[in-house]
Amino acid sequence: MNSDDEEVELMDPSLASNSILRVLLSEASQSSQHSTHTIKLLNCLARQGSIDRKELNDLVFKGGITDEIKGLRPIVWRVLLNYLPDTDTKNWEDHLRTQKANYEEWLKELITQPEVKQKEAEGGAKKMMDHPLSLNNNSEWKKFYSDKLLWEEIEKDVKRTRQEVAFFHMAIDPTKNTEVDRLMK
Image 1 (spheres, rainbow, N blue to C red):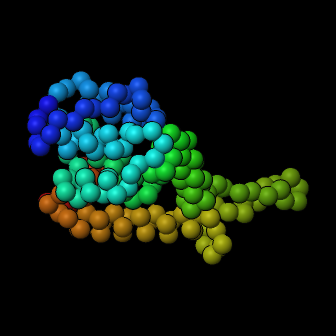
Image 2 (cartoon, rainbow, N blue to C red; image 1 turned 180 degrees about the horizontal axis):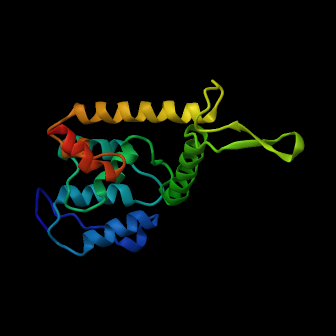
């Protein structure tokens, strides 16, 4: 363990309030090369019940969030941004499951997945009500294609945002990366 100012003992992983923190503590306990600051940050998160928000803010402000322990940075940011509750750490898994279900529901609500709609006509023939070539303003297909155009424009704008960062050049659909790379040359 590096000695920044004082010797700090890493909390026992079995005492952590949830499995997320147990994994972080277990990973940290595998090595003795962690800074005092990182151990204090982990201990602050892993205490039973709730997180001392002032202490967490002070630790992050004064020393940042190190990359010494994989997974620590995203957890700290989720707490700081109030995505994970700091008052009830033992229920983080349930909270994350609920948030994921909310997100999936939101996707179903907002992203159009059109289907060809048919209606039974006279004489047993089927009449198409909504189809990919429909010009009807209420057509799900028309909304689908306009949303697709919007996504393509957003993707172009994101790529133009920070050209020096590779992340922004990756296509949403990985099969498009080679085509986009070819077009950008």
